Length: 119
Length: 152
Image (tube, rainbow over all chains, first blue to last red; front, side, top):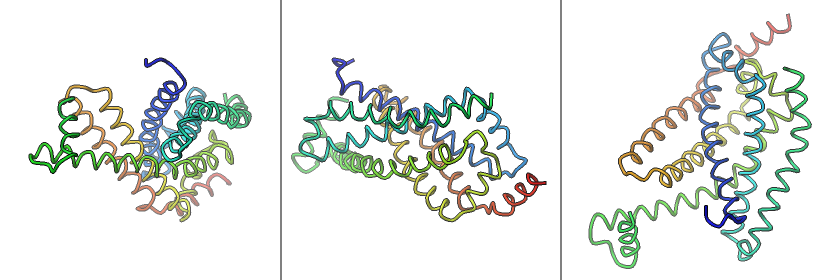
């Protein structure tokens, strides 16, 4: 671990969320592709799995990963293409974390009761 | 690997004189292209992915997604076009990001090559399946049939 300052944590979270999202993307395209096999095909088996509460909690983490990775990606673009981005990278990262939480609260508010109601 | 990148840097200063130097140079140009692509596709993916999550998780209860819902969405031309861009950019962006990770963490050349070939093969097959799902099937009749069953 290199010094463990903000930039390092920003990178670690970006890498972890990126790998997780890429692997989820592959799984997600596979499961949607099963729709090609018709209404009585293996898509329903996948849905039973997807609608289980542990997987729905996992999907909340996918949403959190998309929001963090997307906002931190904008921070990287700002650092690469503006003259001031690197100077304020630390403040920008706290902005990314703050916005991720700000977006996350209404998302949790909407989806957690749906998950609880379906258990 | 250190010598290879040193050769790559040396090759930039002059014309490449060996195949190895030329390859090191071409590789750095390709990497520059991917570096630019990650930023452009990333910028496009922010609204594309956020909009996708909004439609399926906020505007709808994802726990109630079923065959009729997916078939109904995939029979809409706007969804087909939207999802094609999302699939294309997310696949290229994600697979290139996984390639960066493999190159960072898998040090042995043989294993690195093997991991990348597995990744590109699997991702290529899945990408083709995704394009087929969006464009090779009409879900209208199937979706209507299932919705009719649901309302009986």
